[in-house]
Length: 394
Image 1: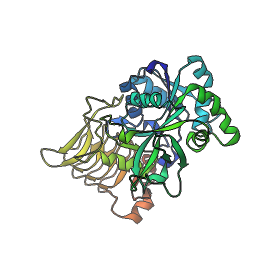
Image 2 (image 1 turned 180 degrees about the vertical axis):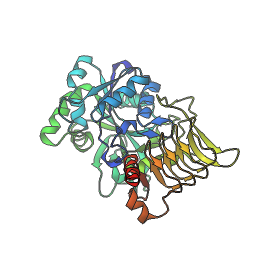
Image 3 (image 1 turned 30 degrees about the vertical axis):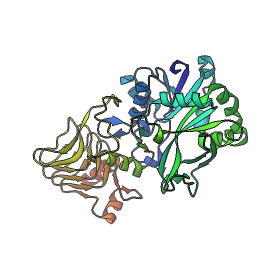
Image 4 (image 1 turned 120 degrees about the vertical axis):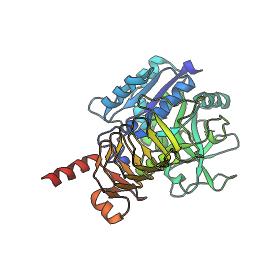
């Protein structure tokens, strides 16, 4: 059935919740885990699942996304938003290309997101969809109840049919058999093409332009909409899934990589490789001299004479002698001066940290110099770094 499936990846979000990281970088292209871009995970899932033709719907900084995809991803084609216009929502983005869907005449349309970190064999999702005979299948995962209100929360009957879909409710509905968990949407939708083209355009007239908020809640009233529980799929790929569309989740998901018993390993996946057009990186539990511990470091970095603990260090980064980096995400091309100290920080690509700097050890000082997230992560903006240096020189 793969040859009868048309795949779209929604890759056009502006990434406001990731600002300032997305001020000069498209959200799908943000670095992740020192050796990847966020987009690599969804594209790798497509490749590994045998999906040959994938269309990326781009919008903000479309040129950069197109250049990256062209540099190392065969079978992926970028489609821009309408000239001079923006997509009004996820459903609007897909339905804008209804002529492409009609001309391709697929039996199924698979819709994915470009800002999620996970592994999934979409063939199992397709098999489930065909077996249950539904019009739409929503991929879902069991998620901690305390965090579930950030997503679409699903309730199903004993045949996996969705009976309720609440987008970002104030209080999430727990699973009947697991009161500490909720079943949440992964933002992955598999439509029968006829149902999508028939019902999708009706929702903007009565409700709105988004799948999660508008189309899916409307269709569960009149169509068979099923939930594919990825947690219980038995795929062997693990059940890790993170939406990294905000600063704190972007940071936390990279810290997840650094546990020796990490629930997610993108580096040693011979059975499900995560491909990339970027440079490679290596996980170090400890180094010979004891100066690197539980960290992921790009292979072309210079960390000699520095101490790195539970951190992600991007390509062509240089740490000066005596520098100490703890619990931080350092992007590519960063220069960290002698004896500088960083803790619980995200440092943007190309930033320069001066000698003896102290970041992440004093909230008042950090707030004066940089943006600090809700969970206290200091975000060092490379442009603000350059502005401070110019002011100092002047």
